[in-house]
Image (cartoon, rainbow, N blue to C red; front, side, top):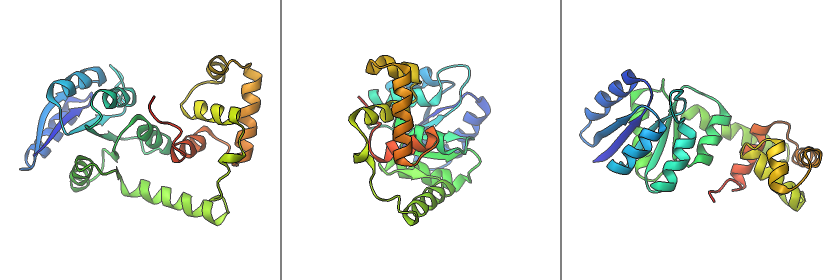
Length: 217
């Protein structure tokens, strides 16, 4: 029996998922929550095997910070992100937060059930189109020769700035954390992006995840 907690700000979504999942003999919805803080408390009380976590909950704590906090409290509980945001940046931010899987709300019921079973078995799950996109990006990089590791070309300070940028800190915050001027941070950021042949923060996030730079402290 897989015990499931649903965290979503829409009551109709929670009701629909509960009906769908409780119809399966090996699944049981043990609780519901309308936002992140309530979800964390319910998880601590109920100790579910899997938490279905919505990303966007405007009336409370959002899914990403809730996921990060929940994994600190219950590291063995699998969290499956359930969202309408088909966006690579949200995908990698979810992985960074500690989610075991990422699936779209409009996915077929069979796919959702498979995703729940995967993360409950301590396996990672990505919806098929996301997996395809990541593979295409990897193959494209390989063809361009970008599979060669350029990380060691970065200076120690550039590596520090890379980690901070990927974690979402603004230049001013990074400057304060590393005791540098904002101008110096911008210079390091520009140099490391040039060395890595990257132009956007989402690209840096993906790279940082692959390099294991976004680990919990």
